[in-house]
Image 1 (cartoon, rainbow, N blue to C red):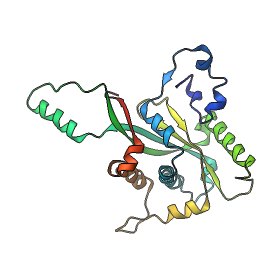
Image 2 (image 1 turned 45 degrees about the horizontal axis):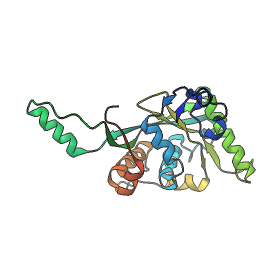
Image 3 (image 1 turned 120 degrees about the vertical axis):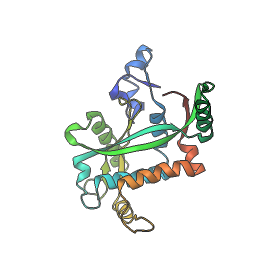
Image 4 (image 1 turned 60 degrees about the vertical axis):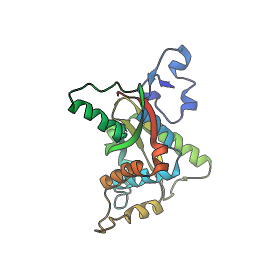
Length: 226
């Protein structure tokens, strides 16, 4: 599935499909880059998104400033990388010998990684992200959840591809006081210092490499170049 525009990249595809210009015209649309495909795939994975929630909580400093969820959205940059160390070593050995290595296969397995987390002030938040969040809020309220005055906060989150900066995936998250408390208690095993946003991102990327189950969830086969 491609996108008719930047605004087409929304979580509520079932609704947008009715007005998507590419759906009606049949024209070729922009292809989602592999990192965004994985981002969309993991939105419903509680184990992975629990780690992402911790990154969002730390980035917004919700422990000390819960009001930041109303002032900022969070952009998470993402990418996919080759992780076949043996293949890389073999290709380097060809170059060392002054030889041209054999061409890479057209497609190779790559692994989803998080780059950085950045705050987006309200004046720079895409209107379509706010619309997506409000739609999600309405759905929750109709289900009897996230009622006015509740202690939960809605975090406006979006994945941004490092490969194709036009490509995004909106990912609103509900954060509870209990989740904030857990994130606040995360510390380094040796120093006991609180973990930072950068620490949690590094832990996410390392686990993707070392945990077979997590690696399987975060892997995708894509073009060897790009």
